[in-house]
Length: 424
Image (tube, rainbow, N blue to C red; front, side, top):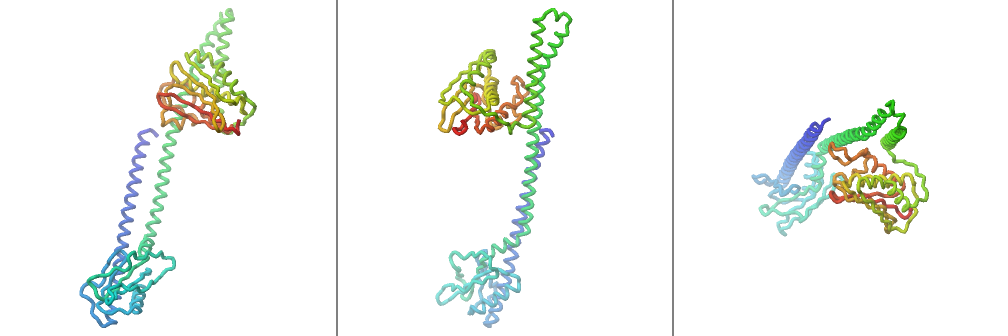
C-alpha cells in the first residue's frame, strides 16, 4: 500500500470515527431529553390525579390552572386549595404512582400556613438500592399558594439513567468498534514502517555486497590471465584480496543470519575476568589504520579504579568495536572520538563520544531497533545493516547492564554503558 493510500485511509478513518461519535452523542442526548419529557409528563399527570383525589376527599375545588408546578428537575409543588391529611396524601401518592408504573423513591413535605414552613412528611422507597439525593436546602416554598405539598423524587436521575440502558449498551459496542478500528489503523502504520525498513535494508544490503563482489570479479579476471603465473607477487596480492573480500562477505552474511533470524536476544555468555582498560587499548590499536586513514583521533580516558569486570570477552569486544565504528561513521571528516571509563556511585560507566552530526530526537528512541538506520535518503555513503546497535543493546542486556543514548543534532552523540556494582 503506497503512502497516499495510507494517508487517505487514515483521514477517512478519523472522519468516520468522529462522525459516528457525533451521531451517537446526538442520539443519546436526544433520547435522554425525550425520556426526561416523558417522565415529567407522567409525574405531572400522576400528581394532578392525586390533587383531584384530595380535592374530592376534602370536597374542595382545584384551581383553574394546572395544580402541578415543577420547581426543579426532581422537585414538584402541588396546589390543592384545602387542608391536607398526611396519611391520606401518602396513600394517594403510593396508589397513583403504582398504577402508572412510577416506581421512584420520593419524599414529601406539607406546607403549614400557621408556621409558614414546610413540614417534612416521609420518605417512601420502592427499591432498596436507590441512591438517596436529598434536597440541599430542604423543601422550597411557593409564595403564591396557601395549601400545597412538595414532593422530591430522590431517585429520579438514577431511574432516568437506568432507562437509557439500551443506549449505553450500544455505546459500549460502538466504543469497541472504534477501538478495533483504531487498532487496525495502528497495525497499518506499523506495517508501513516495517515495509520502509525492509526496503531500506534491502537497498543497504545491495550496496554492502556490491563493492566486495566487484572486487572479487576484478581479482578473478586478473587471475584468469595466462601470464599471471609469471608474477607470483601480484598473484599473491589478488589472492589476498579475494580472501579478504570473501571473509568480509561471510561476516556480513553471518551477522544478517544471526541477528535477522533469531534476533540475538538470548545470547549465551561465557563470562570471564576481562581487563577492561587493556581491552580498550587493544581495540583502539587494532583500528589504528582506519582511524589514521580517516585522519581521526581517538582519546582514551580511563578514570576508574576498576580494571577487571566479569564479561564475555568476545561479545564485549564486538560491542566496543560497534560503538567506535559508529562514532567514526557519523563523525564526518577528521573525527574526534573519546572513549571514557569512570566510576559512578552505582558502578562504572563506559562512554564512547563523538562530535559528529548527532541523531534527531524523533529517531533517538529507535536507534536500537533491529534493521533501523537513521534515514539518509538515497545516500549510501554510511555502510551498515542497522544491526550493530541492536546487537549491542541485546548483549548489554544479557550481561545485566544498561545502555543509554545522549545526542543533540549538530553536537555529537554519547553512548553510555552502565555496569552496576553487583555485575562487575
